[in-house]
Length: 193
Image 1 (cartoon, rainbow, N blue to C red):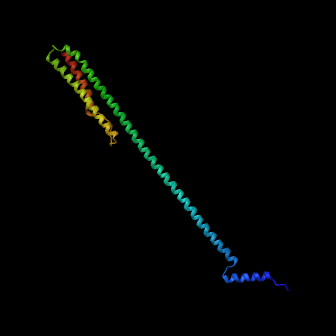
Image 2 (spheres, rainbow, N blue to C red):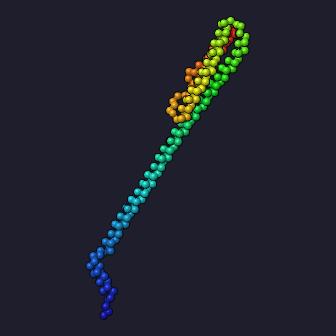
Image 3 (cartoon, helix red, strand yellow):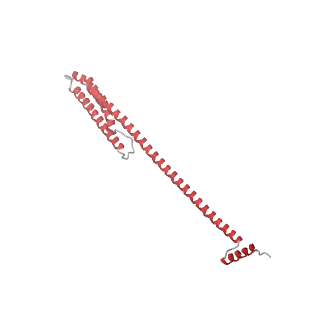
């Protein structure tokens, strides 16, 4: 009778596996399923963490972009306000220069009637002198107002807090009225003579 060598070898392998404490193939499959389930869980947590990090990074980037846009908007708004104030100051200085020019031309224009008033009465000469004095005061007030506006523009350009409109103040308004009253006095002097 032939010896079933394959059966004997299979029995020996089974005994050695039993001696080593090896588990049955069914328990190995359960163990593999648990390992695969743990691997899937770890892999899923890694993917979730990576997605969360990407979303956080995008959120921070969007917040930074919003902050930069807000800062840029504030800079543009401040530059616009400074430009409007500078333009208002330039217009005011132009107006004051015009008043100074009118006062100078008016004063020079009154020199012609002054030659006629040399032999005139004291009242006519006093009216002419008062008119000249008011016209010269108008020139001085215009120059003073121009320097006030220039100083205000310098403060605005230096970044100092500026809340109101640029104005020439009382001396700017006074210059116009000094011209009017000066010319009125000259006219009274001419009429008296």
